Amino acid sequence: MEKKVKRIGVLTSGGDAPGMNAAVRAVVRTANTKGLECVGIRRGWSGLISSDFVVLTGESVGHILTRGGTILYTARSDEFMTEAGQQKAVATCKMLGLDAIIAIGGDGTFRGALDLSRLGVPVVGVPATIDNDVGCTNYTIGFDSACNTAVECIDKLRDTMQSHERCSVVEVMGRNAGFLALYVGISVGATAVLIPEHKLDFQKDVVEVIQNSRLAGNTHFMVVVAEGVGSALDIGRRIKETIGIDPRVTVLGHIQRGGSPTARDRETATRMGYHAVVALAEGRGNTIIATQEGSIVEIPIEDALKMKKHLQMDRYKIMEAMQLGISSCR
Ligand code: F6P
Image (cartoon, rainbow, N blue to C red; front, side, top):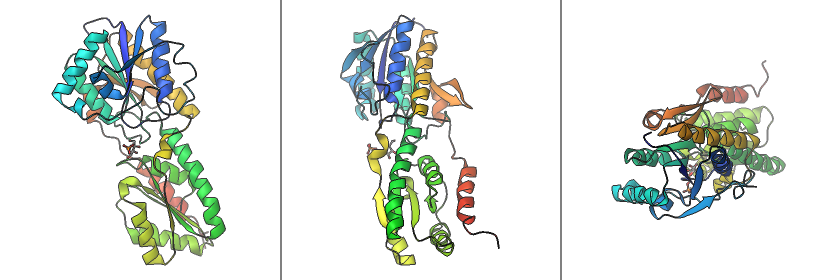
C-alpha cells in the first residue's frame, strides 16, 4: 500500500450474520490501540455511495459483542456493481478521508471489495455469512450461531412430531451450499438430509431411509432440506404421494440469521476483526482474512475469489452411517 493508513471505514454488507457486531467492535478497538480512526459506513456498499456514515469510538461499540444483526445495517447494492456507483464510493472515501475499508460479509461483498481496490482504495475483507460458503476460508462468522439456532428449533419440532407420530420436513438456509443443512442434520439426528452437493435419489435418499427408520420402530421422522435442493413443500408433497404419510413442512427462514452470537462466533469475529486492522496498520491491503486449519491467514482478494470450497462429503457419509446403523446387525 502506498499511503500509511490513518482512517479506516468499516461496513457490513450482504445478509447479516450473528457476530458481525463483534467484528465491528474488534475493528474499532484494535484501531484505537494503533492510533487509527474508525468511521462506520451504514448500509454496506450503498452507504459508501451515499456517504451514510457514523463515527465509531471505543465507547460507541460497547455492549454490541453479544448482539445479533449489525448496528451498521446491511444491504445488497445493485448500484455498487456499476462503474458509476464505484466512482461515487471512491469520492466518498476521499471526502471522508478514508485510507482503507474493512468490509464484513460474504463473496458478494468481496467482489465489490475487489472492484473498489482496483480503483485505488485498499480493502480488507472479513468473511461473515451463515452459509459458510466462502471459498478461501474454512469458517465464516455466523455459521455456528445459525447452526445452533436451527438445531434449537428442530429439537422443538421433534417434540411435537414425536407426540403426534408425524414426519417433519424442515427447510434450512445456505443458498447454494449444504454446509448448514448437513451440520444441522447430523446434530439433530435427522432421518434424512438433502443437500445440493448430493444428487437427489428420492427413492433411496428419502423413501428407503424413512421405511428403514419405521422398520427399526420409529414413528416420527425428521427430513432436513437445504434450500439449494428446492422447496421443502415439494419434498413434503412427494413424501405424501409416495409413502402415504402426511408431513408437516417448516421453513426456518430468516430466524436462522438472528440471535446472539455463540462463543465461537464472538471469538472468531474478534480475532478476524483484530487481524484486519493489523494487516492495514502494517501496510497490507486487498486481502481477505481467512481461517485455515485453525490459524488466521491473509489471502489476496483476487485469489480468494477464485477459490472453491467443497463440502466435506465424509460428513455426508457419517450422516448416512447414522441412517444405516439404525437397525442392529443381525
Ligand atoms: O446468504 C445468507 C442468506 O441467508 C442465504 O442463506 C439465503 O439464501 C439468503 O441470504 C436470503 O437472502 P434475503 O435475506 O435477501 O432473503
